[in-house]
Length: 366
Image (cartoon, rainbow, N blue to C red; front, side, top):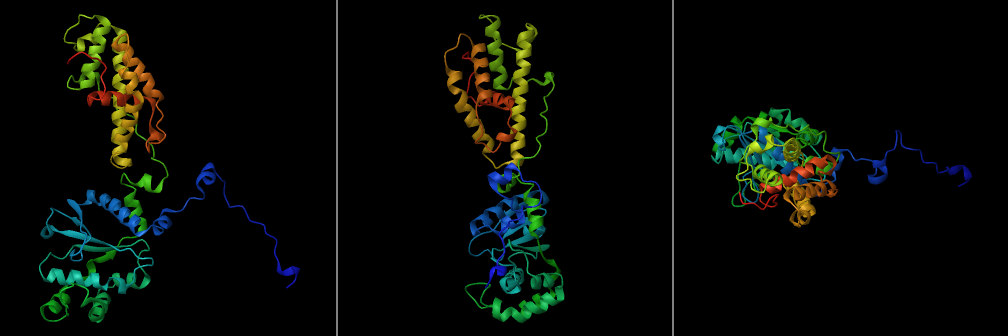
């Protein structure tokens, strides 16, 4: 070995511009590759999240789990929650390699056997879903129904007889064989990982699992002023605050107060706008983050303002203004919604908390 056998170390910079995200989190991993790194538990969680995306396409979607599932996994019921009204099955398999025919022969046989027994009607479609996707050999069988049928028959004794149930050996003969011969093998198919991720992106779980931000938040819609409702507690509480600021003797505050003072009216319009900003954030959260994230943010706002709200103030208007000022300054960096939360949202959440009887603008009985 001589000097010519060695090469000077000279790493080549990655093509393209680097960014602050690369420094803080490294080079992004494509979503399809990230899914393939999931553990069995993470795959199970991801599958549950993905299955929720199917609900818009079916009457209802259910997950069958545990022993005795009879070959069912994620089931989409088409017209009702009854098998007789049509259904699709999504068989989710976790393997550290692409699915092969030997991995799933028994799954084919379960559908044949349990439809013959009358446990359920044949599905409209039967899909295989796996993190490493479908291997070439299985993929070719799924698009060649006659060949799939032939291969399953040849492999029935080896893979299926003892795998369908734990209580009996299921031989492919007699009525079961007749049912097998008439069964529609074109129903079998697969869902690609790309399609799964695209569907998962429609769920509130996508951003917290894969990152990438929450996208653009729509501008809040503020209902017309003539739609103000005294049924909302925060409205009644605000009117009590305004009544006190005009006259301590004001009884049964109502919307006519807003016509008595332009300062009061402008304050009311600001508070109402803040409330609907928070309502808009609540709606946005339902589509973009898991259940409970918005409520956790509300709790952070409550913790940040409750001492200010409950402190002694010269009047209720001072209480309102001090609490609004404090709410705008509450730090919410720990929330998944922090990137889309504005000062008006935080202030509006205080009105939501008043609606929920957790805060009060006025001590006057309603």
